[in-house]
Length: 293
Image 1: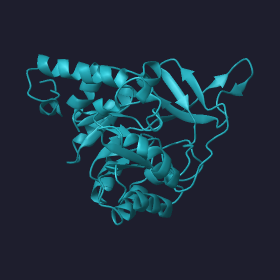
Image 2: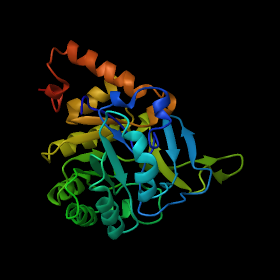
Image 3: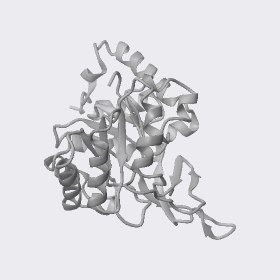
Image 4: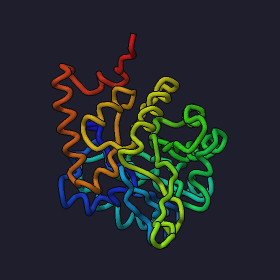
């Protein structure tokens, strides 16, 4: 990675729309939308709604399946000088394993982000990620069929995120992404209906940043693998906070809906911040937060 800024899965599709605004090769890595073994239809609309400091989404991981990704989506991404991390989803451990197996020897795939944390599907994903045992079973099974870097994406909707993080690493994870969205809902008081057809959705944006930052710091104290910080990163200052808390890299999601150039602006801002801190590279600031005496 040429810099620590990545896209967050599900917020930039498979790159075509974002590439209309800037060269994807400027990114540290591009993380794809969730990809499953077979096509998923997703949830019925309405599937998104704005909140006072972010948004709720209940897309349901709609995608055309791994074979369609390899044949129709990946060729476009191969045209850019950027590592491609495929976000993998499944209803069962067997589905995760088969998607990973099919992607393992495909040119242009550089890593797998194992999504065991999405709250918007009826089964799978968060079911596995909500317990140390579940996440260890998924990661351990996928580890057996691929040599690609494995990056489990952790849910914040647990009692102890450190426990699930440690379990993932012990099962063979090479890095960790955290956090995915927080479970929430919203109601239209005039119609007296839920604003999402799924009733609940994943809360993202600035509202979750303090929670995400706390969890990144806690996990960084407990594991010795790279951490990718996610949650409400809107600018370079937000990104720098996650890096100081212990993140080696960060992902930008909701900010992209507000400004498609957010990733580029954050890359530029981190370069400026690094110069101001008189460091040779941003890596010198990973985990460099100071506690009060």
